[in-house]
Structures are given as C-alpha cells and as structure tokens.
Length: 363
Image (cartoon, rainbow, N blue to C red; front, top):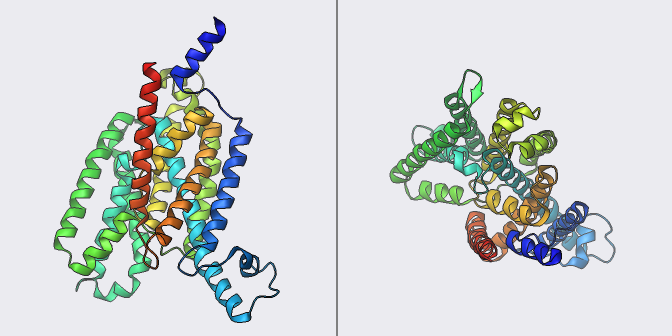
C-alpha cells in the first residue's frame, strides 16, 4: 500500500525522478561546452573540428598559413565574442526569470512582464529614429554605440519609475509593482508603435530587427560590460536564495522566519532590472528564456533557489548559445533574428509542459 501511495504521489506531482544537484550542474556544464564547440565550428565560414585547435592557438602544424589566419580571425574576432555574449545573456535572462517567479510566487512571471524590456526597446527604437533623422544627423555615425546605451537607459528609467510608484513609506507593494509594470509596458509599446508609424523604410527595418533580437553586434567591449553584471548577479543570487525559498510561504511567514522582506524585494527588483536592461542593450528583446528555463528546471531539480538559480544560468546559456547558432546557420549566409527562434522553440515546449502537467494532475 505504501509503495502504491508513493507511486501515485509521484504520478500526480510529476517528480518521479530528480537527479542530484551535482549531476544536474555537471550535465549542464557539459552541454554548454558541447554547444560552444559546435557553435565554433559551424557557420557561413565553416571551420572543421580538426582545424579548431589550431584556430584557437593550441597548435598549428599541418595547417596552411592563409587558412590558419582566416580561421583565427573568424574564431577570435567573431565567434568567441558572439558565443560568450549569447551564454552571458542567456544566463542573465534565465536568472531574471527565476528571481521574478520566486518574488511573485508565480511560475508564469517574466522580466518582460514588468515592462523593463519594453522600456529598453522603446529607448532603442527612439535612438534609431532620431539618429537617422535630420535632428540627429550629426549622431548617425554613432548609432551602433548609442543603441545599447539608450536601451540600458530606458530599462533603468523604467525601473526607477516603477519603484517610485510601488514604494511608499519604505515599503514596496509587489502587486502595485506588477500592475504598474503592465501599464508602463503598454505605454512603451504604444510609443514603439508610434515610432514605427513615423519611421521610413530603413528605420523600420532597423527597429524590427532590434525588436526581434540579434547578437550580430556582439564585440569584446560589450563583453566587458556584460561580465561584471553577470558576476555581481551570481553573487547576489546566492545571497537572496534562502529569502526566496522562505518567501514562498508568504510575506508574513518569511518575516517571522527572520527574512528582511522589504530588503529582499528591493535587491530582487534592482537585480532583475539590471540584468534585463544589460541583456536588452546588447541583443534586443528576446522572449521565453526567462519563463521556460526556470519552469523546466523546477520540474527536474526542484524549487530550491540555491540550486535553481545557478542551474538556470547554465541552462539559459545553453539555450541562447544553441539558438544563436541556429539563427546564423539556418538561413546562411543571411541571419534569422534570434527572438523568432526562442519564441518558435520556447512557446510550443512550454505549452507541452503545461499540457503534461495537466495530465499528471488529473490522474
């Protein structure tokens, strides 16, 4: 009877098997390494696996000098910065989604939900239109440099506005923060629609490509901006993991358990905004990573944030690196916006998980 009860419980919850945390982390690290190697070898300028060590500078025997020079240029100037940017952005977006879901106690929460992504996208679209018009003609040569700065400034401004609306007398209302985020996202999307309406053909193409997401502009200087944010985010995630675990029981229970709930809210909100803003500033708007990755990992390794947050970073890095590899090879020599792939892969996958969970719960 006990065995039957245990089996029935496992069928209802869907947690029939959970690997150990160390095994999950090792598998994700191996998947990330394998995905990175594949991304290094495939593309419009293919590099066979046998020539990859020479291109990385490990050894160069039996490789013609012109071929070696081309391979090294492709690997070090284009592919390694792009792969590293994809991994960092995937890690930031996935961790943001995990924190949002823990903070709102809702598995459907996402950084885009509170308007941070929309604020950055609106600022980037405005920069495209202004620098390509008569008013900003003198700044047109700096458009590529101004886009990430504008996107980050828009995300930061959105966060400041949201925090000022939701905070009163030193307390932050998560419900007001969420509702205000939805309103600001609607306003930002309306602004983007207005910019699309007044844009010419070239501006419209640039805005559309930005809104769909792309890592074609990944460079070493942009990596230097991503790396510190990723390091700070990783350290902060470990510091708030216990608080997010206790917050699942409710704010009152978390407070009586010794958690400074208001401080936890402030750190989480600022952290999510910074991570999302930096990601949007580099690659544009990319959806579904923040929803699918944490939700799937909760089913596999459990809801403990001490393990969920670093695992989400690794899985998000794997997902974004793989999606970017497909984006630049599936229609080579052209490039497909990465946001199309993440939505096309993430949405059906997420829907399948929901249907599976519904079937398990109904048993």
